[in-house]
Image 1 (cartoon, rainbow, N blue to C red):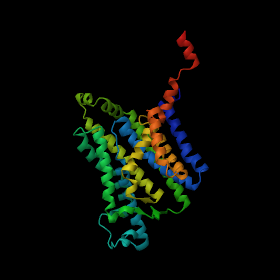
Image 2: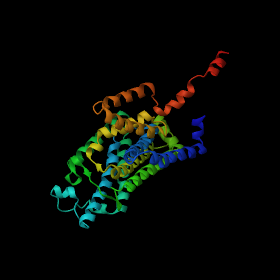
Image 3: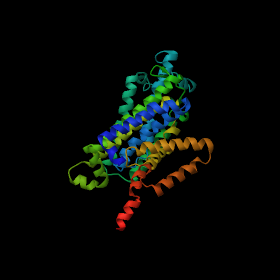
Image 4: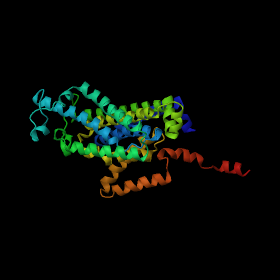
Length: 359
């Protein structure tokens, strides 16, 4: 009965109200500042997971390279934060501290526009999305799919991380860190740190609402049709490649926004945070939560992030094995992820149904 109710308009509003109550009411009230900051990080992972759920769960595209778009949004935001810090310290055109240590005396030309908050926000929204559109057109128009697309996206994540390591103007292997201000607000202030949590929570609810609208729209039905019978969709006159590109671009946009929110919360971004391993972690959370549902990727991303933090604190060397065991158990026992528990429970025959069947 509950899943049917949640599928209605009243159930949808009830679900969003309950989520808002937990995120904006209970969590800030019950969690310490440190734990609330951790939850804010986990919410950023959940934002990425929503996009993967749309592209993979509804569109059948195994996206193993979302770390690329997460990293693009993160680095774009980090460039603005470092530029703002340098201008506060030395005036317009000042060089960030890490560039001074590297011997760079003049601000690179491509850094200069990021002193503008409006330009930075526009770049976070447009550049990764445009890159995803171009890449998607190049790949899907050639009908690359399945394992080949997964390998290509994973290779892209690895190449992107290697490229960043060689860029001293972007911090190289160490990345960018030690941010002091976020759009004029001091990041060291606990009040502003709580504000960042509320921003992450609001963005998560926003992307879930967008994903829900897409899933329930005619486009969402067409995306599922492309996933299940791509050749038949082409026969009916639709361009399946364009349908895939839209989902892939939306997933990239969500990942970019998540990366931009992640940077001021954590205070650092480096190639190690956006390569192959983080991309697999994003996908792992979606698989465990249930890629076919709307809420499953969110639950899975939060569960995996929490388990990684909790277990790594107690058993630092054993977390990797626990992670693999968790993935195997879910795939073996719950192929549909955590979100499929409710549907499995409905299939368990009750005593009454057994009596009726015997009669």
